[in-house]
Image (cartoon, rainbow over all chains, first blue to last red; front, side):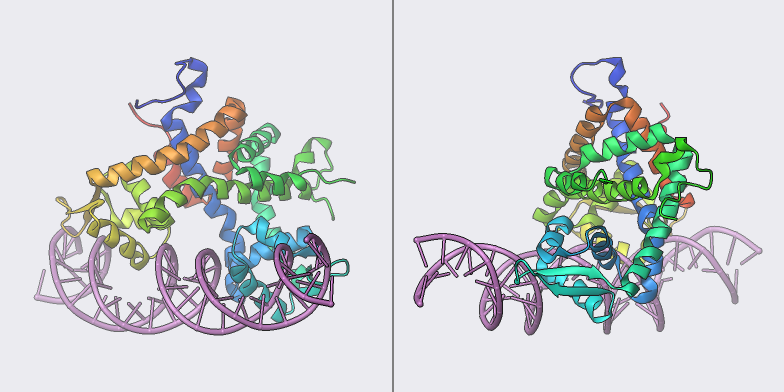
Length: 168
Length: 168
DNA sequence: TTGGAATGTCAACAAGGCTGACATAAATTG
DNA sequence: CAATTTATGTCAGCCTTGTTGACATTCCAA
């Protein structure tokens, strides 16, 4: 069973051979390194890491989001997230407001300084992604998104699709 | 400059809007979690982590590879890699042989037990990737690969393409 | 023979995951 | 109202995996 491209033996399924799959796996590995390389460099200067980037990204995407919501999206423990949020709040990049509807909740927002860093980070990351998208072309990008969506865990796909299309 | 889809204003470049790029970024983030989820679960049982998986994967792909080569591919320090290799060797999953051509080098191989674990890990990861590939279809997979290749750093692309096509 | 390259090892440290336990405030439920 | 649940924060401690720096060994090559 060197090639388990499904049980059909259909020639149209040659893209499902173990070897093709392995190349897909390594493509993910190497590409993800490129994907994070630029933000990593920027963050290292301030003494931050990827965890800070993730928090900043999703607070920016959903201003006023709660700690619990962030926990679900990031898939880490509250202790781990809290440590990161603590430094971001102490450094004046994130503002935490007591919820109005439910006063147990904390609504999180980026401050001006936080928005500045977010812009710097996402600009670097977007530039690389945009260059890659432009090189690959629109059809490739559509395929890229389709494969990645199929690779997500179900609950992650929920967090992704919730913001997939921007309502005008 | 809310939409910086290139400076052309061309409608055919709508896939390069900041919003489309942001979705691509989040797709990478969520998909990578799915990508590593299954191996992570398996590794956790043995007390290993992703670093062990990476070492095992690339030793399996290139039996007899040297430590230096592995360092270049994995992009970590030798101290970090050495710690992982040490545990794998001590646990009998990896065999380290003094190089014949250059006796300073160490050629790394998986033992039988190492190959068993490699199979278990890659089967889990491949199953998910294969399912995603099958759902998305061959054209999408081609696009997926094209975008990821364009996203890699130059030297990483070298390591990727070196083994991109399998010579028969 | 000497310099440098490849490798290994020791020590120390930090980020960022984790678990478990506990505190507090607020909402919800009986 | 009392009890429980929920949301959050915090302390302590552990693990993996990354980092630097220092130093030893081996051995190829000039």
